[in-house]
Length: 190
Image (cartoon, rainbow, N blue to C red; front, side, top):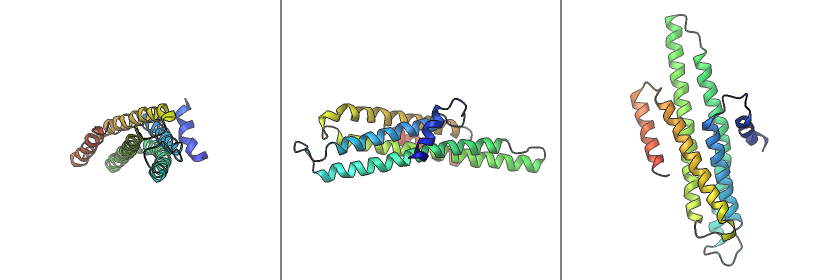
């Protein structure tokens, strides 16, 4: 749990500029996933539920796995930003250094684009799980499910926004184009 809280506390730390919107988006998605799992759990064993307990247990397990993945994704987003900043600090006195620095910046930027796209994909998976529960879960947890949907949507939109801003700095048009396609496919899931 402590490592999972690292991302969350870094977002709240006003002195930590490495943990921004991408990390916050992943945390929002993680909270959404945890809520989806909770809604599934409180639906287990209720005779009035339209589905068998296995249905809710599966969603709970998937929700909990996504919550963990998204908290890890928040930390990964911060680390990816750190790598971009490290690349920008590389020396640029000689032509060789300039070439190496540019290549390092591009590699780091590609990584800093891949990470929020993975987080966006996980947020889309949370939304799909929430959709499975709509109208089929414990009515007393309807507001929790609504919160999960709102948080997952915010996480998905925020992660896509962070990916898009990084795509603009990628010089390899083939790589940038592939990332843009992934963004559009994920945007359709909102």
